[in-house]
Amino acid sequence: MERQPDLPQKREFEANLRPMVSVAGFDWRQSLEQRMAHYQVPGVSVAVIDGGKIAWTGAYGKLNSAKAEKLSPGSLFQAASISKALIAAGLLSLVQDKKLDLDQDVNNYLTSWQLAANPLYPDEPVTLRRILSHTAGLTVHGFMGYPPRDELPNLVQILNGEPPANNEPLRIDIRPGSTYRYSGGGTVLATLIMNDVLDQPFAETMHERILAPMGLTDSFYAAVLPAGQCANAAAGHAAGEPLDGGYVATPELGPDGLWSTPTDIAKFALKPCQRLPGAGCPPTHSG
Image (tube, rainbow, N blue to C red; front, side, top):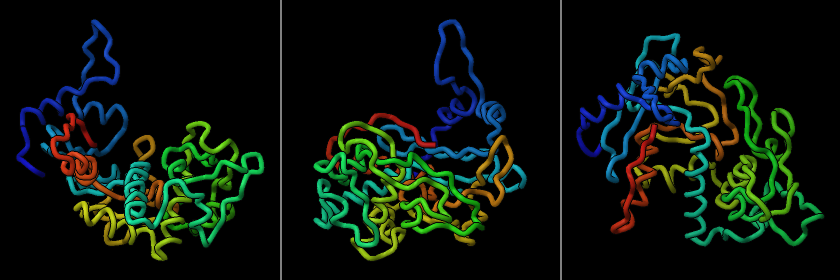
């Protein structure tokens, strides 16, 4: 944290949350405690960015609705699709080092699997630029996850949509480059590219290239939460009840495998502001 909390600002946040949509003549506000109760959310962690710096952090409620342990600003959360922003940075670091080209056919980099061509679009390759902008024409929107104790698929099984994977296979079914369509499956493909090009585990690559250099000391990629981190991790909940096992396993890694804190996510968001002289960063929030 870069400076001491602005306590009046923090108290205002805790007492006067506004709705997403304001209606003239209605002043519907709730305290954070009321909002958490309304949505059956047992715990919230917040990092507030103001003026290009982390102004304050806060943690409210419990790690698990069925247990007594309280959240702290250092408590871990599954970052879900925020994971995609960090793998994008990792891929661009490889482009910077000339190990990858944004506009090459991705099959040129793959050694452990190949993306089947669609004969309708022979002249439109799937490229990293298109994967990162979700314009590659790829299927598989997202992933359901797995109970942590289940057998987990590897990346090739996920891409093929074969057991024990619970998703459909990754395919090209619309013209690459023609339109935007979200594809978590494309990010799995990018994960495999990083593995094949560097011949090392994805989590290790991301630690070396992004997490450690950016000082994201409470962040890591993992399909299954390491045993030593379980006591500090917020459980996932549905309708106020903790998930069986506490969370869902994410063997896809690149699109959804990041564990992190709001403070680390805020640090990542602030890096462009800190690197570009005179860059103006508007006040934003991470939570």
